[in-house]
Length: 454
Ligand code: HSE
Image (cartoon, rainbow, N blue to C red; front, side):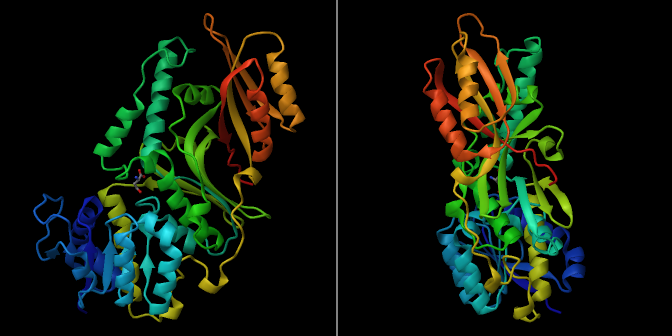
């Protein structure tokens, strides 16, 4: 059988990796797909740019629509990113009856409902394994491997750049602890936030706009997609609560460790009776959890199904060949189903399009979690009593309190871990505590999840 012809939009890091993997593993891929898979036409912004791949045998163009309109191309791979031109190209490819493979999480999270509806009407597939957690086949695992389960919740480290930064901050904090004889975070200089971010950019992990990594937007794109395939709900990116890591200090990382926790930038999606929690924020998790030990640019997604229990998917979440691994797996999947009945393909969002649920996304005020609070208090009698009274009056139960001795004339730092409570109650209590004369500045609040099996 003739090889299937693929058109490629974007010949950057992931595009180059895709060309290389397809060439290097051509034999293995053909044995799996039932026929060869070759890139015949590729669009790139700059024809003369030095590349990580050999483009011999590929027609190169600067016009992406030439690829999308190429009559010989059966599958279009979209790797240009963004959700403007990429959306236009993907919709044009679908209208031309071509199948699409994309690594574009922003595109799927924001325009997936429209794209899948159009693809369904045209009887073509849109595959997006590479959009979430790079090389980890977590879309396939949740959509197909866990198809027997009622997924209860999932929690993921789904941005490698953010995880790299938090990991570096931890190493710095540990270094300072030993340098200061085990007590004073900040006494030794750790790695600067900007320096660590620059390294992630140089390694090719960071988004074009690194605020997408640091402020959690990239993770929110990915969590939106995961929640849809886990719970069978439409994509609702706008409803995802997103808080970044730029406010996390090395002191917080250090104090969390003293209490037996790690701070990770988690995406959490949980199904409750009232609706779905969909939130990205820094989170304390017990250091004994496997996912707490996922460091550097690695990603991991923990998924709890009612039948299987907790399952953990770990691997490289970014980079040329890890992401190409997912792109090529999608190409194999699509190639296998080219001749199959379009009505009997795996649905884009795991559940049949007419069986999606209208379960609402819950506002943050209604979610329930535990908390880490850090406050600066004037060191005088009765301050802690005032704080604990406000927490008690708000129905908030304390799990642990740590008070750091003031150094010189400075204020005392108080760390409080609470039991689970509704966010609205915590908002109220924080407001009341901040209004006390004895409390200086704003209270640092970091949510805490124990990620128990039940
Ligand atoms: N900027 C992303 C990350 C790349 O750091 O994980 C993969 O989506």
